Length: 344
Ligand SMILES: C=CC1=C(C)c2cc3[nH]c(cc4nc(cc5[nH]c(cc1n2)c(C)c5CCC(=O)O)C(CCC(=O)O)=C4C)c(C)c3C=C
Ligand SMILES: [Fe+2]
Ligand SMILES: [Fe+2]
Image (cartoon, rainbow, N blue to C red; front, side, top):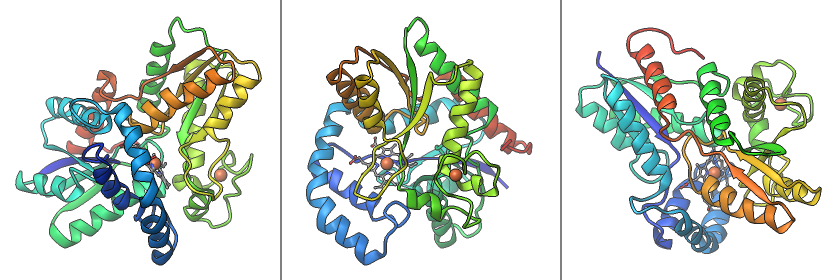
């Protein structure tokens, strides 16, 4: 058997043209694991309401962060792929769950190189139905339809892996060296609370309260909220952060359902109103900088903080193509390719 890797990230529109943004949002939001309501209700909501207003607004936001080479998320993912490729001896392909390059083209590229054993590598530290699960489900559908002889292995969420924690913590301490900050906010992408309950394999553990995510449970294998808290706890431990000098919040909510709380925008506002002047923020749900980090946090978040009296707002970049991160990913891939188990 011949081995290869498919890195998969979320994806971006092809350009900042509202038509491209509309096509991308249509594919993204019609995913039943992103907006998890019956098909008729999703169609009504997405095609009848969201796609009539959101693409124009989102296109304006994308214009603020777009690079000459294209979407930061795609460009940074491509740089990561190229660097890993230069360190490993097996083919490394890159796909996006939505937009281009799609998962089918990534699998085709590997297939054309003679690969019949693929390591599926969702580029998300924490499990979520709207991220990891939807990648694995679509990839499996495509495998059955187009490449029935291909074999898949999946990289599990690495939210608590010591290598990931070390690199994330080092990236934070590098960015914050010499920066005087009062609080470090760990802002994760939010999900509707309903998603957390749906992913609870025990169907009884998850209460979305102060205790469930801290009490041991098999449910945590698929609990995004627990995994965000664990990443935070382990990084705080690594950096020796004192209690009450860091906290967790959830950003990017959409719609009227309750999403995971506290919300990042309200948290930033509250901190400023309480008199905090120097806030640092890190976004560990994303391994590549993107709209949600470069616009929502670094631009909008800073504006909110300044409006309520905050002075210094420091954003830690995502891991992107940092060399220590590239080294870790290349080593995990080699461990798999040369028959050593990838540590969970
Ligand atoms: C409406 C439901 C959404 C869920 C659930 C959701 C979960 C989720 N998303 C990410 C990562 C990213 N999301 C990004 C953009 C983005 N997300 C949503 C909606 C949901 N996300 C929308 C509508 C958008 C598009 C932009 C907008 O109109 O506001 C991005 C950035 C993409 C880019 O091109 O830069 C990322 C990355 C995670 C990790 C997650 C659940 C854990
Ligand atoms: Fe999102
Ligand atoms: Fe929980």
